[in-house]
Length: 160
Image 1: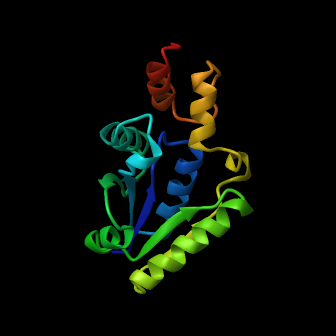
Image 2: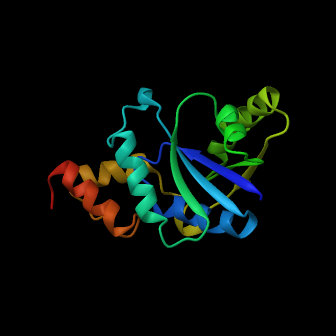
C-alpha cells in the first residue's frame, strides 16, 4: 500500500488544503493528513480541534485519515509506513522554504520522497493566516473553508 503524509498546522484547514488532499488520493492508496503540534505558531485551534476539523472535512474522501504528530516528520512518516510527503506550493515564495525542508528531510531519511503539488489557481492566494484575519474582522470566509470550519471560526471570534 502506497501511503503519503500531508503534514501541516491546518489552523484551520482550507479549501486549498482539501484540493491537495483530493488530488493526492488519486496518486496514493492512503493519505494521512498529519496535523503538527507546533505550539510555536500560537495556533487559534487546539491540536485536538484541528485534527477534528480535518477529520470532518475529509470524512467523505475515501482512504484519508487525520492524525496528530509531534517531533521529526521523517520519524512520523516512517512510523506510519509512508513512502512520501506531500507539500503544497501556492507561490514561488513557498518554494525556497519547502525546498530546504525537503532537502533536510532527505538528509535525515533518504528513503522518504517529497512531492510538491500546486493547488488549483482559485486557491493559490489562500492561507490559514489570511482566513483567520478575515474571520477575526467579521468577514465572510465561506468561499475559502468548509462550512464546519466557518462555524468554528465564528465561534472563536464570536461573530455568528
